Amino acid sequence: MKKLFSLVLASAVLLAAAAASAEPQRLTMATGGTSGVYFPLGGAISQVLTNKSNGGFAVTAQATGASGENMRLVEAGDVDIAIVQNDVADSAFNGKAPFRSKLGKARAIARLYPEYLHVVASKDSGITKLEDFKGKKISVGARGSGNELNCRQMFEFYGLDYNNVEPIFLPYGETADQFKDRALDGFVFTIGTPNPAIQDITTAQEVVFVPMDGPIADSIVAKFPYLVKDAIPAKTYKGQENAVPTLSVQAILVVREDLPEDTVYKLTKTLFENLADVARAHNKGGEILLDRATDGVTIPFHAGAAKYLKEKGALK
Image (tube, rainbow, N blue to C red; front, side):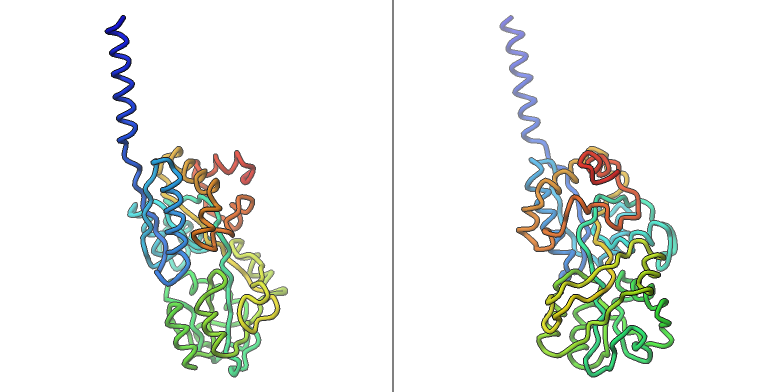
């Protein structure tokens, strides 16, 4: 009997030691450029997933070229998790331009926060509506970016294309510098609010926030269901006293489809049960809401995420 008890005790000690020494699952999250929102928010989410998983995960945020590159990284299996615009995810998943083939290995976890289309023009450009962009020098974002994709989508409905506007392909920081130097008539940023570059611009000069609403906005949303009619809140920027009608896309969190269901369930659960910690680390964390977890998501959910969201009534 003593021998049996000793064996049981020894087994228990070995199991406890094995559990204590178990390595956390190491995962990599693709984010965006260091001057944007994706990188610091991704870092905040990664830290919370690591710290609140009881040793289950060790998630590392990686700076990238953002949405388009992130979908390719997930497809190649080079990263496990990524933040992407929902419209870019849709285009990649379905093999639509600017993607040349289907990138079908990403699955959604949840919507994170809205990214508003900021259409901004200099006061002296005379631009007050989208149609006024004809003949003007407009920054449309880095070539092939989600930002540029949004420009192509909306320009079509306003009779604009790259033949009747002068498109300038610049990332956000360089766009802001050139705009302040009066080298641009306007720009389009698809980004969360408040954007530091636009804040900087509006403290230095007067600008016009060009609205997108009415029947044309309805037509755009009807064609592109991942776009949502929205508004930049009043007084987000200096001189912007009223809300600006516009469209928004959603930043969403995606994972590799071949991650185990249990792993993704735990990731999803850990994220949504610790949103206050994400919000303390980055202000955009306050916009991650369980009851809006499916907003604008048009690619399939990972089975693990779907299981958690259905348990909470967020996914039917």
